[in-house]
Image (tube, rainbow, N blue to C red):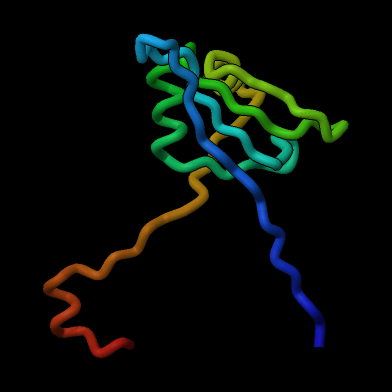
Length: 105
């Protein structure tokens, strides 16, 4: 029997504000490398697209050091084709009418 291990990934979202409450920057910090692919929630990518100048991600570089990318950099790299956005997850939900007649098959 082969043992399988679950790799835990630490990801954290935070925001910085001025004393008056004005948003300075939204940060998403994750212990992953872009070269291996990272999974971001739809809401996060939408925030990056909608407010790239106020958003940044901090990831691991190939040298394992922190590597910050601004939202603007990510959007530009996406447009240039140097990074590709793939749908990574789908949500399946049974509709109410189907659930009353479904037998689980």
